[in-house]
Length: 277
Image (tube, rainbow, N blue to C red; front, side, top):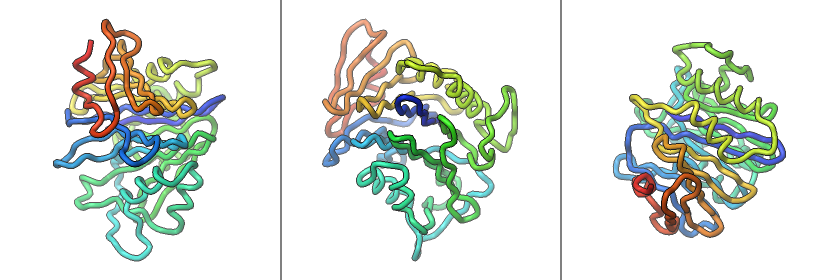
């Protein structure tokens, strides 16, 4: 039950809170793919790429989408499995437009069944101002492009808002995460310039979760500098900085002692970062 955004002004910035049960997580550079950073989650004994940015500054992620319009689409002609789209986009595309071209007229399938495990949607965003949310709606692709300076995604179908920003205090039980969506959207609209990573982490701090779903990682992606700023387990007093060019993540503001980890190979676990003070 996560929250994410793409924001554009004089530069592009992406952000995500990963909210889940306390599953193993890791940060790494994908082996054999130049400049491809990935935040992975271990589910059912397999590591799943969950939030990524490639060397062109293209961002992509997965989040839960609690939607009555979500439908399973089986394999067949004209069907593109979402895992194939995700990996193909990050390995071959530089822009959101190129991702849409990769999809073409194919239907994106969120498999496997049952639907409780695959009710997902994706945010794709590039460093040039292009972004969209991809969702399944009654067995068809639904694409919501960025309008204005930002695009937000939480855990309900973004297309159901038709571009509207929820009012403060607005509630709708059929739209899980509506409050988080509204808080992020309004906060992003109010931002000026210049800004620091800490300003965007502050927006993510406003929408953390601590109960059934807890915020395990908060990430701000800076495609211009090829960096990712990370706070773990809702501790926003300590900020990690991943330098994708160097392939390392190092302690930054708030740490009593310096620490640095390689992102190569298996990368570094969230638990290893959380243990540093």
